[in-house]
Image (cartoon, helix red, strand yellow):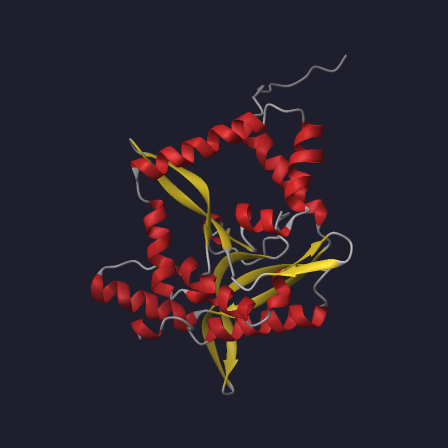
Length: 270
């Protein structure tokens, strides 16, 4: 009989179970995936010079979300959802869901889901300030978030077939519930976990459309017949192919690339 080597028995927490439910919700979309590289040199230079001049550290991710909001607002088919068999719902407000590290007091910080409502109507500064405010400790807001957490814990007491077959299904089949709970667009930044590693993240997502930000690396680029080293951001874009064809998806990614490359939204800091 072969001996089993050393091993550790752990506990699969309810929090991890909630994540598996969310990942399972990706089955409601037939995603097509685009992988792009975007020159972020100009934007990084503006943010760096502002920090050196004022000491204020502005959020890079908030800037990318501003660019995403602009690109999506010009290509609204990207956030069109199916309603029943023959109807579609297209939202005109771009609501971006992201994760922020929330200060819960006593030195505790936890990642929470946060939705930036009407991001297309907000300036970069407004988005940046909103994210910073969401990260700060606020007793009243923390109480509200604790109530949400308790509701989630209550839901997790139900058997899996009820959670996924009834609760999640009722949300994922209703565009208005989707917008209420998780916004219209997803945006996640994974580059911070693998700095200097060139590549793309391909998440399984509950969002119809999502953008995943990978690492920023230096790469040689030919500009005016000269080779320059530029800061290149890797972005993954996922679109629901049930609604979005390749051409509008490509137009959205092209517009996103343009806005980022030109430093869109950072005009007040130049």
